Amino acid sequence: MNERLKVFDQYYKETGIEHRDLVHAKGYWHEVFHCWIIEKTDSEWRIYLQLRSKNKKDYPNQFDITAAGHILATESIENGVRELEEEVGINVMFSQLTSLGVIPYSIDNEKIKDYEFANVFVYELTGGIEQFTLQREELDGIYSANLKQFILLATHKIKKIEVTGYKYENDIRHYEVKQIGLEQMSALPKSYLLEFIRRLKKMLIEAT
Image (cartoon, rainbow, N blue to C red; front, side, top):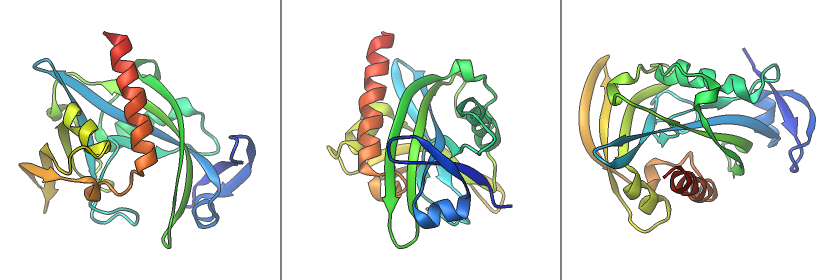
């Protein structure tokens, strides 16, 4: 089924509705929902990254936002909370999320023209990685990283970070610790990551 999305001009003014395939083929601005899950353990913050399925058309086997998806033409931003339950099995109310506002960004290459208004949210988890139930069609795994290290990576201060989590291979869950760099996060443009980090740090400072 080809989803229908609202499309916008560069100033976030709605201009119509188009099929998702056409939106990505033509490079129309559209809305997406991003939710980053963080958790405080032993006085340090950790951030969760999903491992996209190796069977995904776009960015297979890449580390990405904890949960994300398109906002359909029939939906509001609040409906985006369904992505948390669908992709990672975390059932929360929209009111439990903290908004970081809208971050516009684009990816334009030979494969895709992706112009997005990302409505970005943060959810604070308790209970650890076992709280997740993965949508296997979308995700192969879930990992967490020390947030300070993630920030250093995103701001190009270091080249690798350690992530801890698990992935499925032949329906068997394998726990592991591994090193990843930005080359394993190609779905996330530098401009987006830098702005996300800036807003996240501000949110955490204001919360203390």
